[in-house]
Length: 360
Image (cartoon, rainbow, N blue to C red; front, side, top):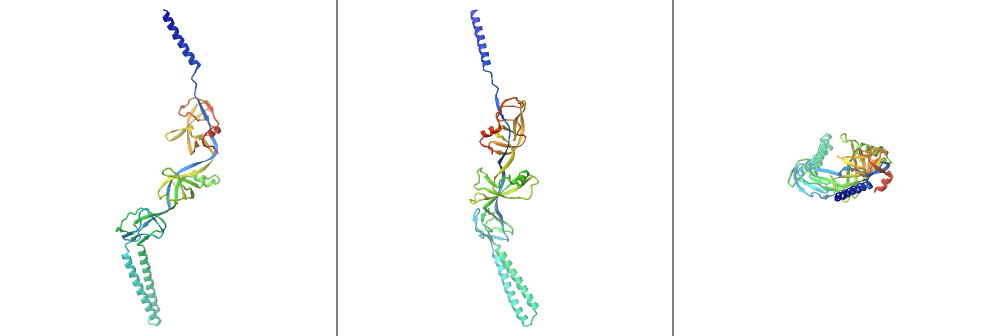
């Protein structure tokens, strides 16, 4: 009987100790950090997909029909202006030139005879005029034959790089057939499309417009060594996309850029009175950005936002928030819709100072 009493007392003591321990160490409710968006004047780098083109890129086509007799260059070769690239068999055109020159000589003799006879009043001056016309026609035929003969030699119109050569020696070429392309890669154009609002800001807000100096990020993710200049804006918007094309010029002394490459043009865009929030205050669902907004009852609710720009650690918000809202800064993965939370409010200035980027 005594053993049962002692055992019962031990159990009671343990229960009391356990309950006392729980009362002494109550579970603390987690406290979150909350801040507000901030309105500042800043700038961000906007990226645009670009198509890279040579300053001059032309197709070289045959101007006469014939057999491809000589190819003097190779694909990818750099050539100088005036250098002979191809020759189409010239025999037929050489013969035409010889025939035209013979007719020219005959017309010269005929004119000389007509002039002599006209001076002696044996024939009228009209006969001399007819002979003069025949000579002019013969000279025109000579000039035309020389032109056709010159077309059998295809020369480079400017310094550049040869593209693919689709035809081989001995190929029968039709008039107008493509022989190759020639690209002047000394400088390059980067074309990129800008939305209508961005275009209007660029054109009208001169003091705060985007810098006409732009950078180029290549397809391998590395920056191109030279800066470019925005120098041309096309005349019309694309009706389907609502964009307008800008053109930037880049030096290309190392010949790294080639016609047809792609890249990303980076333009520094200024923003006045921009609403900015820390990137870590956001979360993403199906390519849409959200934040948790804290109401006056300390309840959180998700809100979709639109991002117009991105700078290190910060997002520029175009729609969804005002500077008077309170947003959850830390713990966005820990709360659920309509959770009531305890929080500590940090001023946007303190939050910004703790980020790597200091707002200007």
